[in-house]
Length: 407
Figure 1 (cartoon, helix red, strand yellow):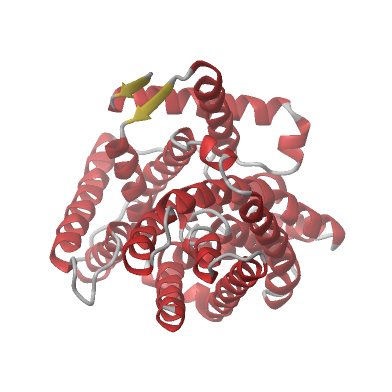
Figure 2: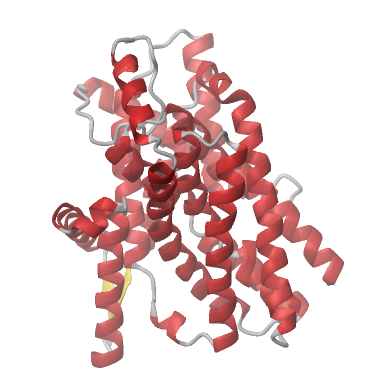
């Protein structure tokens, strides 16, 4: 029996499990000590509950997807609206270096997936599905490329396989980021360094924060500020939907969330630097963080874990191998290239988030780490931009090139 849950019911259930996640993290030392994000824990509890209801009582639920889409678009819009060009310059060289790490990992991820698939007697393109198509790309990319691989390349069940693989990645990406970062911080004794830097920064009130940098900080906003900010969000999402329709089937076709992010960047900087309008960053941060938590909770709430149970042994083998490769690559390559300091450790948590999950998972990972050890301004500048925009472009180019070669 399947129950249809409307938008309000979906929101109520998502908030309920978000609070459960918050409670469990506060009460269970393992979750707290290893910096596991509250939305991931709460959403995972919801997914497990849904799995039990389906397997033992044949009860399932379909949640309203429109409100989840809106929250996703609000999250990416907040990334764009928070991207002041003067702040983007701070990312500079570090952003480019981190992007190199991301590009290298996408290539490695696909090499591992396709090599193991071939060794296990499967079509190499199945390894691509259990590679960057789903693990870096997420559910949206899994659906889009799954249809292409089914209709044009004869990979039967590519969409179902992609959704199951993306489900696995979303869970693992949220679970391994915090522990890996903690290991690096403890092993290299980086917590003492960041504590000293935090005390110095507190004396300097000129330092600007990046979006999502302090999710638990109290921010005072007025009704007027809230209305103005919601107007900007609505404008960006409206333009994004229109551009998605206009670009469909053309060379500049992009996912709606990318249009939302890009429009946010343009609106923010046009209003602030051309029209000299004051932008209310506090309101943007509040709406962005709220959208992030609710979206991540809903994304996990909607996962069908029984799809994972139906995966064949070889595919499970590939997914666990990808997990091991992610941990080793981020802990050795990303950490070293980014400077072997505290910022590098936090960036590792973010890389784990969108290396086997999604950008919201990456943000939740770095929030969990910085809540425990201290701020990382660089991570909150680099991860949202790289994970929300550049990673999708890089991934699309790599996937298209591989399919063209093997197709």
